[in-house]
Image 1 (tube, protein in one colour):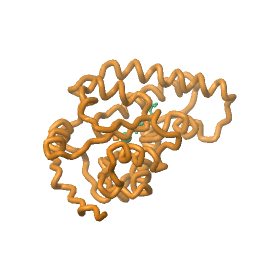
Image 2: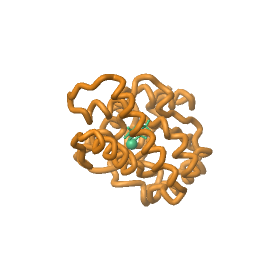
Image 3: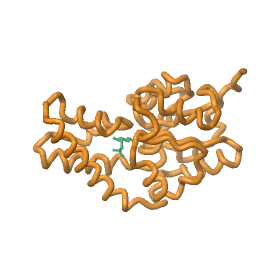
Amino acid sequence: DLDGVITDTAQYHYLSWKQMADEEGLPFTWEDNHQLRGVSRQRSLEILLKGRSMPDEHKEDMLARKNRYYQEYITQVTPADLLPGVADFLDEARQAGILLGLGSASKNARAVCERLGVIELFDAFGDGYSVVNTKPAPDLFIWVAGRMDLNPRQCIVFEDAEAGIDAALTGGFWTVGIGPEDRLGKAHWIRPGLDGARIDDFPIPAATA
Ligand code: B16
Ligand code: MG
């Protein structure tokens, strides 16, 4: 995953939704924002609207505005925005010959990874354009694994979102939850972040043919 695992763009998503919600007079807090982690832009708006009905045209306008604000924020992203330990962990994995795949719900994932300077590290890159059914459907992670000729049981998904852990478990992947236990309790392993993480911390049994 990208947002919340490799970099913390959750704050930029929040500020963009908040600006749009304030303009519309809709209540929206940082706590509400946790429900939007890993969830597609369209689905996020539905959650934010809490059942309020709106003409489709107005919804499209709200989505476009939120994305404009977000794209403005991510122009600030630099390699210094990699979360602690991420660069070392990705380096260690590559040196060990482990394939790396990105599975983000975001249509802005490519721009963010380019700005972070990590795009070249990935052997497969799945983003908000790759599949129709978004997390918690398993489709994105299965798509990414398939691009690397891997079976889900040969892969570990690192996720900060409950929707992402659900997606990975449904797809048959090993899972590491990055964040608090109350959000990620279903994952095989849970860590607050990747700072100090080593690949041996996540031993998966050899896949059988
Ligand atoms: P966009 P991830 C997700 O990214 C974010 O966590 C989620 O908050 C956002 O709504 C979603 O991407 C879509 O992003 O509006 O840029 O297409 O965590 O799956 O990397
Ligand atoms: Mg995430």
